[in-house]
Length: 186
Image (cartoon, rainbow, N blue to C red; front, side, top):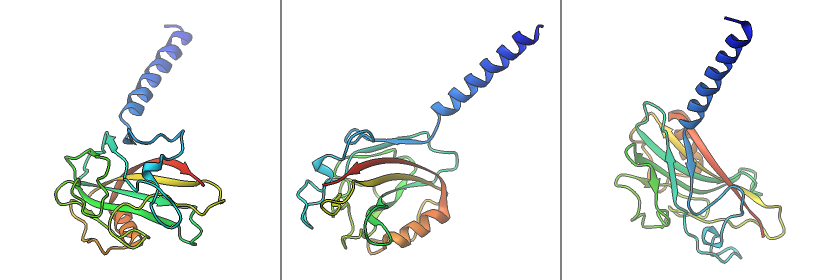
């Protein structure tokens, strides 16, 4: 066999393998958001000078890594002028059999969350989703919607757990995480 043919075959096999790997990557997406567009008014907070729907978006994920026992979802703004960012939503103990949350799952009652899921306290001071509300005139902020695949089926957290505590527990149990980042400014 000529060297050119061998190299072509190896290149083709490597390309096919990489494409297969990329297709099976743990990923999150949303029917309500797109990382190429700013957040819609539905995901904007309705206080602090902001007027919006304060509705958590629909999220769905696929290709969870092997060994996943549960999922968590966090929404974090690293650009908030607080010195420590801003936690907009934390929800843990989502069963491994679940791969989506409907729009509005982050309401204070959590009625659209799967059984056993627990929302932590956001930086607005309550358990549930708190929408975007960057300071007026500030540069657009990044809102990181992260789905965490965890090696634990139940984290010992409740609706009083702070974003920092939830983040600590997640980082001790994470197998893999995937993120969708959207921007919003006013």
